[in-house]
Length: 105
Image: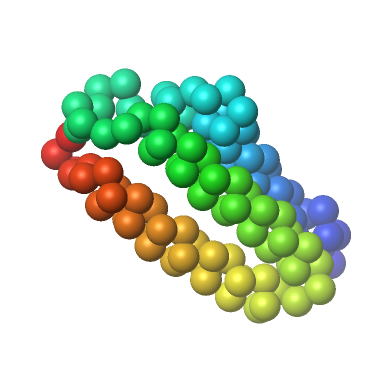
């Protein structure tokens, strides 16, 4: 039988990685955390970085909740993280549309 730590180790590491990029974007205002250095589109980098950092922080929070849900019920945890991922994808797509970011950039 697996211990709880074995089950939540990978999602917990992933949550800390996402939280690291959220902190870089929000606290340190590091645009390279969410915007590529080769990025050519004309956007408001501060606004894009702030909004993307908020989205990353929310997703990191969802990942921590997912880790807690895995302890109690794996199916509910899995459904929660799938729903959270879909919501973040939709929000990120809307962020890119708002700032007119295309894939060619």
